[in-house]
Image 1 (cartoon, rainbow, N blue to C red):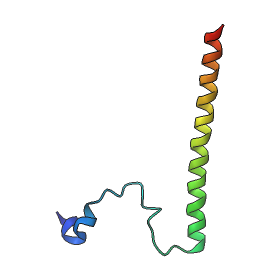
Image 2 (spheres, helix red, strand yellow; image 1 turned 90 degrees about the vertical axis):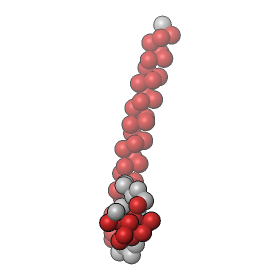
Image 3 (spheres, rainbow, N blue to C red; image 1 turned 135 degrees about the vertical axis):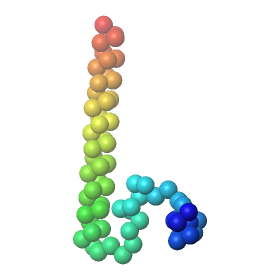
Image 4 (cartoon, one colour; image 1 turned 30 degrees about the horizontal axis):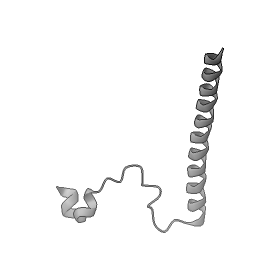
Amino acid sequence: MRKFEKDGSQGLLDRRGKALESKPNLTEAEQLQLKIKQLEERNRLLEIEVDLLKKLEEVKRRNRR
């Protein structure tokens, strides 16, 4: 109730996980740090995807024998 009274309907929106992207007026250094974090996370997810695809390919090869 307090969030609604303070911020109106905007205060009730779910903003979890979006804090870094939505900060206005970041300095150039802060923007670069944010971009680095985003790219590191993307890289991590892509590495996980590659590992998963390798495992899937190995399972397919084993089933062919």
